[in-house]
Image 1 (cartoon, rainbow, N blue to C red):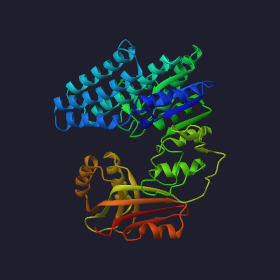
Image 2 (image 1 turned 135 degrees about the vertical axis):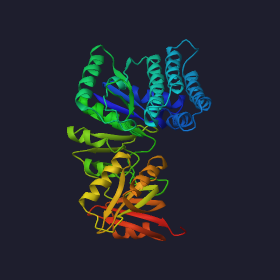
Image 3 (image 1 turned 120 degrees about the horizontal axis):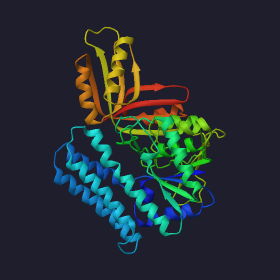
Image 4 (image 1 turned 60 degrees about the vertical axis):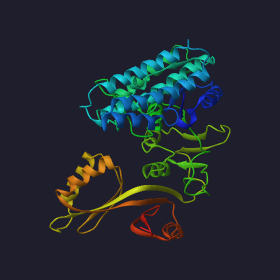
Length: 427
């Protein structure tokens, strides 16, 4: 059994769907579990629906944004299927009806709850189209709703997996499907379900994590993540034009890079695979014959060159006691608790005698409330519009090059990893 994961770029239009079908057809000898993300930029479009409904309380505007999502998916379906008799159109319509019901309902359960009920529809729509198209091409695939497989807690937008129930659900249902003679299963990435049958999401870009969860539960032979790049690169080519492809990586390096923000792999993806020694292949859907990058227990990172992770729109917060006493363990306990309650992740932290500094993503929705809460107990100073560079396997010259012409506000180095919080000199 092999798990494939196709991201939004790989299913962005009708030609892309046909390409996915060709890739799958080339692996018919395996039992395939195919995890699919929302098509193209659908998640962003659905976020605009939520924003209009929740923040502006503008239901007509929300439904207009939803209509744009509907037209986008119908255009793809019209190109893939002849006539309107294919079940794909009724199945898609049922999804849109449920979203409209959600928009007409009250929003008392909060932004995160509404977000998950609406934004999750992107994955439902993409898998309906992919499933019906595979069927039309003679590929005997079953459809599985990921909400019947992955059980989470009630932490909306960042659902925590309930592993025991997920394991039981997945093995029972997926193995049952293959026992009926299907050659594969199509299911959604990114989404799960609570014990009360409410939809949750696993965090932005969480489809990689879904593939990892299912592979762990099913003792898969391997996981393949299909991307629009030839493999894992040592840097984002948008920032580093000379980025190199890594032929192979250790689990440890992959975990470190994902944790620090490497966009090619979701941070939670690697650990379940490492626990069972399941290799992860990152390959190009644009040229499937390329070797890609393999990550596993028997591999070392090659070539061993510095790997760069760049994060923009960063905020550096300095927290100190109002009476200028030392920042001790009791203060840190309170600080970490407040960050956890606000669901704000810390990218870098550093402690001194009288202050505690953290670098975070400047998510206005979360950070503004957090700052107000912190100010009630501590003295707060902060800088916005910063950049965070993380370098794995760095050289001293690497640090000098990155920081040239910029102000270094915070720097940390370990044996293998260096992190720099930088401000452009013009600021």
